[in-house]
Amino acid sequence: MIGVLMNERTPPPRVLVVTVSYGSDAVLPGLLESVADATSQPVRIVVADNLGTESVRTIAADAGAEYLALPNPGYGGAVNAAVRAFGADTEWVLVVNPDVTLGATSIDRLLAAADDAAIGSIGPLITDEDGTVYPSARQLPRLLSGTGHAALRNIWPGNPFTAAYRRSNEAPVPRDAEWLSGACVLVRRSAFDEIDGFDDGFFMYFEDVDLGARLLDAGYRNRYEPHASVVHTGAHSTEKSLTAMTRAHHDSAYRFLEKRYHGWWLWPLRQVLRVGLGVRARMSAH
Image (cartoon, rainbow, N blue to C red):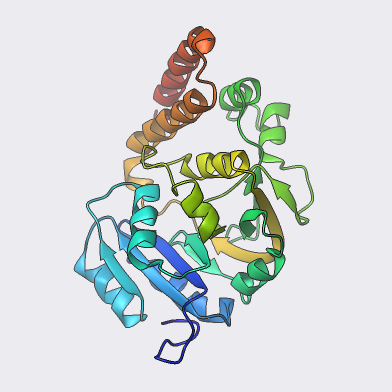
């Protein structure tokens, strides 16, 4: 395998690297090539392919990675399937998008910083190709802040709801967060198993928000470690289906808030949220 080659005398891989491909042929090789410089630990890499293409199978094989063809169960569902199939005896699972390039020693830096058994997940500094820092360590969306962020972020990007949710005004220093971006996050396997992994009900979007929330609920910490860094090119597989993905994003946002605020007495507020998110989805798609 990439990182440290596996043989009979090699210890079990400490890290299972899982990436989910959906027409990711152009970017996947860059991710796979970057793993070797990201860690000195034994790792196993799995490419979960939600399109099941021969081209991706070949890319995975050429890189020494495992390949898992799937009938598109969604992002979180694909990660869950990969962990079940290839994660035996693995201490950590690195969930990473195929359009990410891992920085040198980034996995090792994350492992070194996860020195507290209460840390359930730990995430790196994520930048765009131009070096812009992506706000990847955030607060959980709440009824007031989430509604304010959704309503105002496009017309008033610097509004206080969005700033608080993204924690975008804070310097990139090590700290705890309520959730970490699923573009690249290292999750403790025992914690992942304890909460039954990702919620398969999120087909796309908010599965990482929900994972962070459930790790917190289980008593774990989500830790941001900006001394490890990765570069994310972003959204390659959704560019041609913007309308559908906008709808999926808003549907997932509602599902998350419905899960968190499920009391019967909150039913009227949930209906307002449903209608508001539906209207915003239609407006965003045009």
